[in-house]
Length: 71
Image (tube, one colour):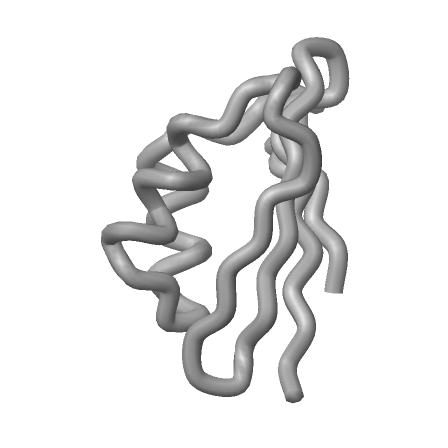
């Protein structure tokens, strides 16, 4: 799965909305904080928990992009 975190009006989702979605797939508070603190200069970030492997990046124009793989 790949998500570009924008709502129905093409606005980036809020941190609360992203946290809610990521919590649903089992992301820890540490991962949520890493995602929230990612900036455009950091490149692709990764984390793994259980059977989920996540990678994400942030772009000032496109917003947050997250890829989730279930193994």
